[in-house]
Image: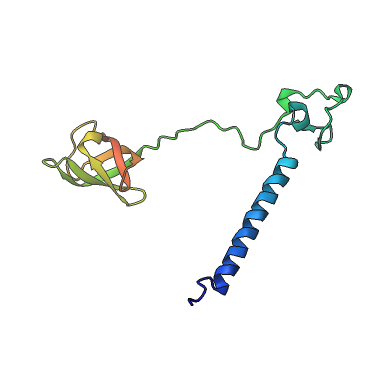
Length: 151
């Protein structure tokens, strides 16, 4: 006669599986019984009273205060965008006409600023004194609106 193929661990797994299914059915029935679906709009509304507290009753219209629009302050300060165009002075330290780029040494900060032929207003050469503005490029500052200064 053969042995039973059902082992203790199989029986335990089946018991756990049945218990899990029953728990799942009970939770589903409980959700249906206590469900919030189907509530009317009035039951879901929330109001703020004159003290700023959330209530389920609408506020009393007689306690309403008038507020002047000018007296409302927002946390961000109102600032207009101010673009300050600083004209810098410098000397052309290197310029390659065939490749169309070079560098200008700023007289104040002594930093070397890249200049491209597209940023020139007139032809420049090495050791020319120039005035220029700067803009942020991909790799750092770029000189734009470059023109020679009158000697």
